[in-house]
Length: 53
Image 1 (cartoon, rainbow, N blue to C red):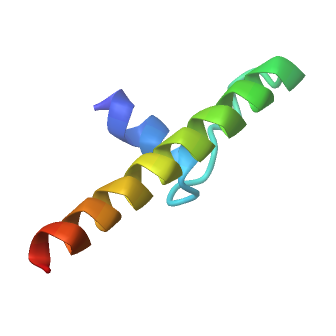
Image 2: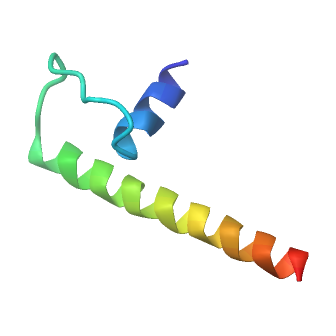
Image 3: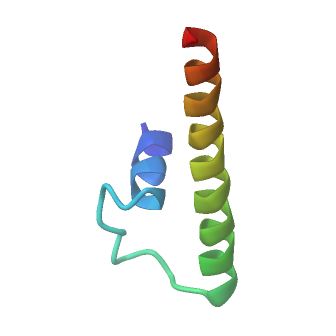
């Protein structure tokens, strides 16, 4: 269940946990993960559009 909570935090659907320690490197990692998830979702949309044509 924590995977879905983390995914929701990446996509700004849920507020971040205030008790989690903050680090610049963790922030960079979450930023890169956020970008890769968004690109993956964009590719799924493009593939769906191509399959429906």
